[in-house]
Structure formats: structure tokens, C-alpha cells
Image (cartoon, rainbow, N blue to C red; front, side, top):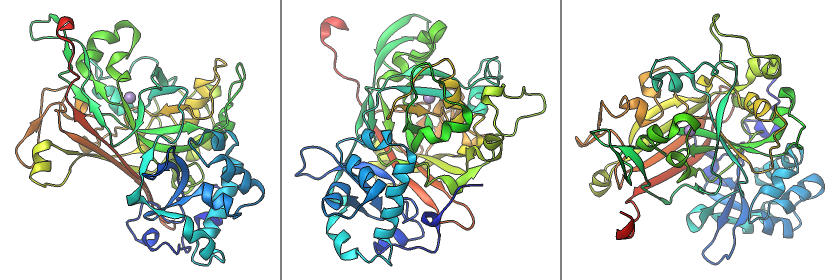
Length: 439
Ligand code: MN
């Protein structure tokens, strides 16, 4: 049971023509939420993506286009952040989705009332959709973990629990901005500790999940209820300084190697929009331990994963100047993850820890079994020892200043309309200039 409804009907089309193109990321069946700003706006406004347009939710609300639960949801989605909408729970958000689907349909009887509130995407800048209170990053691909492990095996606890660390919420930004190369401590060729700009800057291709309904302190989320607490999903780039990580991570895990920047895609793809693309949870080998009861669920086994294609591409400064297109360096799929988001939430809250509306959960690097599905440079270049060669003969072990990394995601299933996530972009800028006295 995928729980699909009339909002997933592939026969439906929108009067916004760009939404009906075969390659469209944002057809009528997607309807993701985001925060946008026109040049004249002082603060961000809540909107829903449809084709190449954004429906201004505040204006549509003022025009009286909503009633009942959809009206409450639209009022909470005006902006400048979506936390109030997320806190209402997915049933309320789904009422808004159903109403929006009717309003934007070719059969809409209120088309003339809706059209004045559609804004071209080309005229706006996308803002942080959420005030992120907490950010937890997991490690749930066994393939990523094995490739980066000194022993070639996952750590002892990997198969009994979804492993995670608490990351930094304040430095999460919507993609498109410049990522300043961070400073840190790393070892030089003679194994002497130095301080300076990282020499091993990497990306990690991940999926993020935003918490909708939270849980009270000391009230864990049961795995069977976990999906009700996830508002939706985005692309997430967990930028990583590998040389800094190597020095600082013994014994307490990532700190400054990760906290300098995280990029997310601006549109939140709702839990409802992703329902058609659910796939069975990872099939464990016979030698692996069964999940402990609080992490075990028949529903998660049946459809806890997502069939979601993920891509990472790179454009170097030289490629950009020569007007060369982006080169794809990763093609993976989210169905390869060993643990599901519901298992991550059940584990995260199992000690009584409370999650709040707008908290961000990272999946961990979404690597699969094949070579092309390696989802960070540390895997692709075997920790910087086996560089990749780009079409213009440039080589890369790690990211250089001017390199741009672009993530895309697309979900497809026979009998349903494909949906996309839009893009998550980030371009590497030079390290900040420190005062001479601190060098
Ligand atoms: Mn990560």
C-alpha cells in the first residue's frame, strides 16, 4: 500500500504548460514548498512550484482561495519560513496539496483567480525554506562506509543501529552561494600538523529529511509512526574537509571538517509527493543481524526506501570559461541505503531525544554498489590517490577553487508522473584572508 490518491493521478495536467513537459521537475503531481523573494520583497514568501512558476501562497490566501484545513495550512505557509506549516502535521499539509492540485489543474474552475498569483521562477531568488533548529547527519550507506573504512568493513555498530553525529544547523544554506574554503589542522607530507586552507575539500551527495510534527522530550517516536513526523525531503551537500576530518575525528567524530557549510536544494518535496516512489527497504544478507524490535517494521521492509535517482556533476572554472557543460561524476540511487528514514527517526528519539518542526536529518552519503554510484570524491579517487580526468584533461583528487558541484534527483515509476527535486548547487571560493598575525 503506497497510500496514493487523486493528487498522484498521472492523467492530470496543469494549465501551467511547463509543468506538463516530460522532463519537468515540478509537474502537478509534485507541488513542493519553498520560500522565494522578488527583488522588491523585504522578506521571503511561501510558495509552491508548478512548472516554471511559483504560486504565491500569501496572495492566494488573501484572495480567499482556501477553506477548512487547506486555509489553515496556507495561512501557516505564507513565510518567511515554513516551520509553522510543518508543525501542523502532514494531514493538514495534504489538505492544502489536494486543494492546490485542483486550483492548478487544466480543469480548474478558478484559473482566472489563480493566474495573477503565479510568479516566474526566473524573477525570484530562493531563500532558506526553514529555520533549522537542529541538524543530524547519519551514515546509512554500507557501500560508502566500506569504501572509506581502513579495514574495508563497516564499523561494528553499523548493522545494529543507524550511526549519526550532531552537525551544525547555523551553517546550512540554500545552494547557489559560494562555499569559502575552510581553514583547519591537517598533516603535511612529513606528518607535521599545519593550520591552513584545507587541501582535501569534498562533497557528499545526500538526501535531507525535514521534521514536521515533533515529539515531546522523553516520548520516543515508534517506528510505525515515524513517517507522520517527516514533512518532506531535499537534496543535501555535506561539504567535507577530509584532511581536517582525519586529524580531528579521533576520538569524537566530525567537527570543523563539516560545520563550515552545508548546502540544500530550495524546494521541499513532500512526504505525500514521494509516496509513489517507495521501494522495499534494503535487503540484508543472511549473515547480518535482524533489526532490534524498536527498529523492525514490516512496513519499512515492504516500502521504507525510495527509488530516487541521484546525480552529481562538476563544472571547473576552465570548463565554465570554455562554455563546456557539467560533467557527471556520480549516478546513484537512494534505494541502496541500509537504513530507512523511519528507522533513523525511531533510533534518534529512542533515548527520549525530542525532534522539532524544521529539524534537518541527513541520510549520509548515498553511495551504491557500482563504481559510478560512488557519491563523494574520497570514494571516487580512493581518498585522493587516484584522480579523475575530466573531458578537458584537467584532473581532480579534491575540489579546487572555482569548481561548481551540482546535484539533481528524479523519481520515476511506471504508471506515475515522474518528479524532480530541482538542483542543489555550490561553487568553491577561495579561503578567507586571515590577519597576518594569526598565520
Ligand atoms: Mn555526511
